[in-house]
Length: 166
Image (cartoon, rainbow, N blue to C red; front, side, top):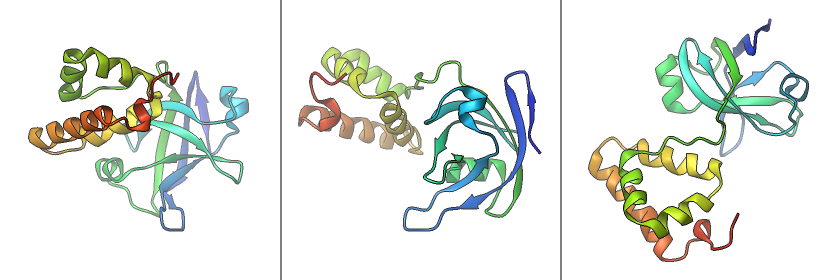
């Protein structure tokens, strides 16, 4: 049963996995997101799963409910598997567009103003995914290679960096 305290919502949910080739592992959010948060689409939240901190999105599904995707890294930290019942607490992210930028990328952005201007045109969700990709590398040399790959894409006109994109 879900309990709302202040702006925090607590609930228990079973960890499930979607079927198909790109199957996500997730928990279903037990409330109407529009009534709870005043939005219909995706909504950024902070929270915990079994006490492990998370920064995620409530993502709408074709079925009309919202889910919280649980990546492998988060599942490992929270020690959860498909079928487990977990304790979840979520609250609105006060800075939904803030993206924690890895040090290697931040240094490159500071050094190359044109690259930084192009980076700022990328939507926050895409920036977040890129930063996660860089940050998940286990070693500094691998993170540096990933930043170099991102810079190569900028220099070769990858669509992410298209001029005039708002």
